Amino acid sequence: VSQSRYYAQDIGSLFGDAEIPWTIERIGLAFDDPETLKTIRALVPRFEGIDGDQVSISFGYSNDPEVGYVWRQPIPYTIGFTRKADDFATGRFIGIRMEKSGGSRISLKSFDIDIVKRGPH
Image 1 (spheres, rainbow, N blue to C red):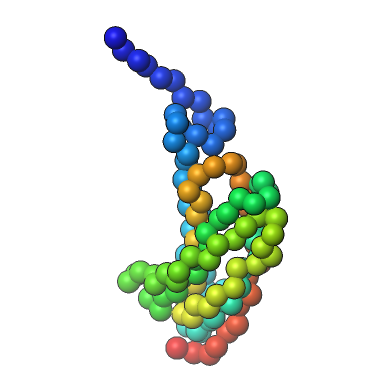
Image 2 (cartoon, rainbow, N blue to C red):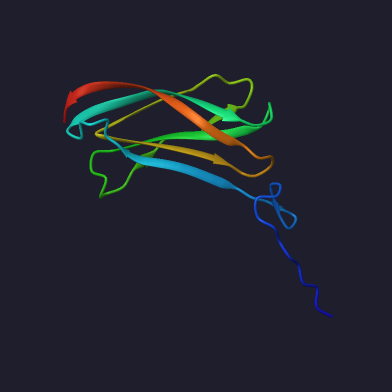
C-alpha cells in the first residue's frame, strides 16, 4: 500500500512533520574599500516574527575572499527582546550569517551595521 504525500510551498513552517531550517548569509562586504581593514562591532536587524523566537547571528571576516571566511561563534538574538547583536570581527571583507533551526515564519526587513575602518592592510 502506497502512502503518498503532497506538499505545498509557502504554507506554514513544516515540511511534513519536520521544521524547516534556514540560513541567510552575506559575504564580501568591503564597503567600497577592499584594501582597508574594517571591524564590525554590531548588527541591528529588523525582523518581523513572533516575539520570543530566536535567530543565531554570526560575524565572519576574510583578508582574501578566495581563501574563505573565519566565522565567530553565533550570537543568540531574540525577536521582540534583543535590540542588537554585539561581537567583533576584523578583516578586509566582512560576512554576516543569520540562522534559525525552524519554527514560525520570520521575515528580515532590513539591518544596520556598526563598522569602523581601521586602515590599510
